[in-house]
Length: 358
Image 1 (tube, one colour):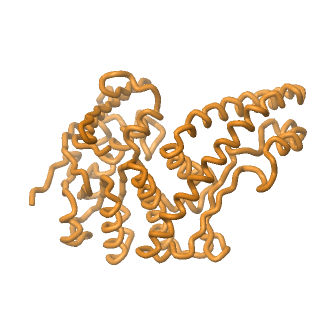
Image 2 (image 1 turned 90 degrees about the vertical axis):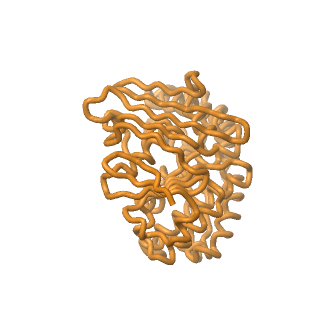
Image 3 (image 1 turned 135 degrees about the horizontal axis):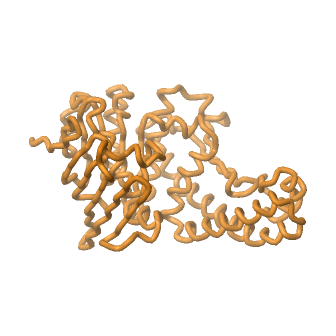
């Protein structure tokens, strides 16, 4: 579902903005600090209920303002939807078509959104959490029972960990194992199915991004492959009691990538990593598009880090996804006239955003 009108008020250095993005590529051009990334933050808030740059909501509110407000108007076919988020210092209100949003999952379902940016190398270099989140974002959209199963699993995990921390008898701790195993196996199966589908699109991108040619993703469930989860929990009960938490399970799952049997991050260069992770994110969006889900992609200043050839490949590939895309850059000259002809250009300066007419 594409956004066709975006209204922002009192968000960082943006006092008031009201723009009508195109359904394809939207270029946001302006100097550093002009407010380009703030526009991306506003969009991300509509789909995730939070910023991708900070967990401190108060940092988002313009100085001397009481709150920030973001409103997005969407159209898909004959269906029109309005999402609004207002956040003051200590309180948030999120509404969908005038009613309070049920949860962040409702926003994610209505407006799936993801970011390609300079910080993406963390997907390779950091621990398993960002990779697990990357995987689960896709699984959530294609496996409809994934969200409820994940909530039930986390509830059982929290109860089991509480029992472990209080050094309860093993029988009390194990009383949560059946629920943990039931939903843990559901999560693991859903993740494995999704990755199998995603791998098809990763391989297809090898034609445009050579870094993907020999790329092989591998999913780790969070406990040793070939082991029964229930048996593994039982076998490690004493160890869990000593540590005070559940050491194994889907909450410890990981997604790793290999090239010719070697860990990808040890084989490819930093520059290649940026291209590769961008391609991986695009593959995820292409997979979702194949099941009639059209995510929005936010590309934050990545074109400046690529050579002209890679930049051209990236823009054309983004265009071919059929998704709505927002790209920030400091100079319009970073793109060819053919690139620019694929979408709309907005000039951003001192928190003001204006459409550049042809």
